[in-house]
Amino acid sequence: MRFPLLDVCARIQGHATQHELVRHFSAEVEDWQSLLQWAELEGLTPLLNRHLIESDSVYPVWVKRSLHLSCTHHRHQAEMRTKVLHEILALLRSNDIETLLLKGSALAYTLYPEPGLRPMRDIDLLFRLEDAQRAHDLMKACGFAQADAVIPPDHFHLPPLYRQAGKKSICIEIHRGLYPNCPPYYPEVDFDRLFRTGHRFTIGDSEAVAFADEEMLHYLYQHGFHAPLTFEPYKLINAADLIGFTEKYYNSLDWEYIDKQFPLLYRALPALHSISPWDDAKVPARFLQDGRLEPRPYSGWPHKRLKELKADGKRLPVILLKTFLPPRWWLKLYYGADTIWERLKCLCWHHPRHVYWWVEMYRSLSK
Image (cartoon, rainbow, N blue to C red; front, side):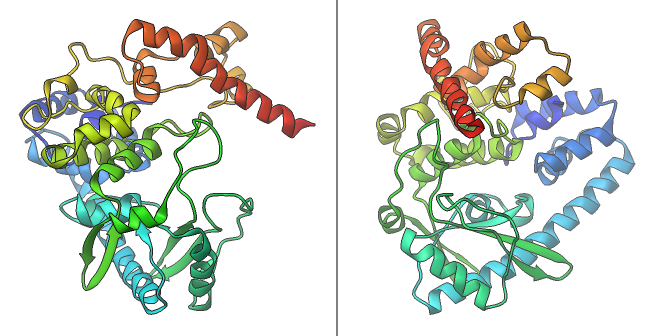
C-alpha cells in the first residue's frame, strides 16, 4: 500500500513545492487510520506530523491528537536510546574499543534537528572484526541481555543485545561488517580507514564517530536502496535520510570523488525525485527528472516467494513479468540504468544473472 502524502513527507526539510503537495495530498486522504498505521511502519510518523504542521494543511483534529501522542512517544524513546548510547560509548572508551555509529544511530544526532524525528528499531555499531566479539562479551558482562536469535557464523552482525530502559527494551546490533555476503556484491569494508577519516561529533559529553560525508551518503544508499532482492525494497525513512543528507551537504560533498568511486549512487540519486521532490534551490538540475516516474519497487521473485505470489492470484506469466521486467524507476534506482540501452543491458544480462544466483542458492539449500 502506498500513500502519496507519505511519499512527499519522506524528507527532513520542506520547501514551497513540497508544502503545496502536502496540502494537496492531505486533502485527498480518505482513510487516515490506515495512513497513520503505514506511517509508523515506514518510520515516518514524526516527519509526517512536522510537514503537516509546517505546510498549514487541513486534516482532522483526531489525527492531530494521534500524531501528537505518537511524536511524544518517539521523543521519549529517543531519550531512552540516548541514555543507553551514552552508557555504551563510555564502556567502550574505558576499554579502548573503537566503534563507528551507523544509520539512525548517527543521523539522529548529526542530520536531524532532534533525535525524536528519526525513529529506529535498534542502535547499530560497527567494530573491527577482532573487536566485535570482545565488545559483545563486554556488554553482556555489564548486564546487556542477548537475544535467542540464531545468527550464522559468517553473518555481518552478532546476536542482538538488549538493555532495559524504563518500560522499553533497547536493541543493540554489533556489526563486524556492513553488508550480507550475497548479491548485489558489496564493496569491501576497511574499518581503520573509515574510522580515521570519520566524522567526529558529540552526544552530550560523549565523543562519537560516524562515516565521513561521502562514505555516509554511499552507505545510506547501499543500506536503504541497494539491498539483496530478498530484502524489503526500502522504507520511506531511508528516503528521508538520503534526501536530507544530500540536500544538507550537497555544496560540501566531493561529487567528483562520488562519481568516480560510487557511480551507481551518483546515477541513482535523481530517482528519489519521484518519492519526494528535490529542493531545486539545493541540488542541480540533473536531480530533477522531466517526467516523474511512479516509484514502484521490485515485486517479483525472490522478493516474494512463489507461494505468496500464487496466493495473490498471480499466474506464471505474471510472475515471470514481475521477476524479469521490473519497473523502470526501480531499474534506475537499483542498477543506475537511465538510458534505453542501459535498461536493455540490465534486463538481458545484469538482472537475470542476479535472479539466477538466488535460484542456485535455493537449489543448493534443497539438496
